[in-house]
Length: 132
Image 1 (cartoon, one colour):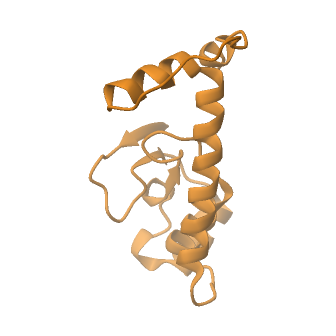
Image 2 (cartoon, rainbow, N blue to C red):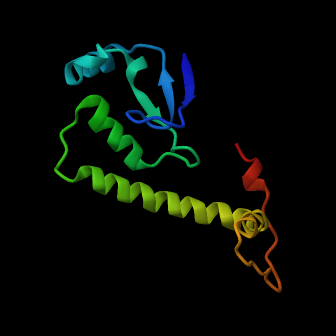
């Protein structure tokens, strides 16, 4: 019914996305009218999951509405979507580093950065790494 796809070199679909193998009357009709190349098949719609490393954001879904359903968009929408997506992913990067500062420091050291541990580092909250 569902398939999670990851295509590292994707160009016309999100790198990581769900594919739905089911049909729903109203949505299938809307899809066929808005984007004839899909022939009304929901299995042709790609639901983004946040790129190669992140959770999806509103911009991911807005882009899919424009691309998959031919929703009207203003000129320059792509740049606005990309800027919003970048801001979201920067926020997510900060959150991951906050949850795993020792791992972040280790990766930075491997890349040649000098990282000094805090004198009194806060306790790490590993529960976020294990949460569903």
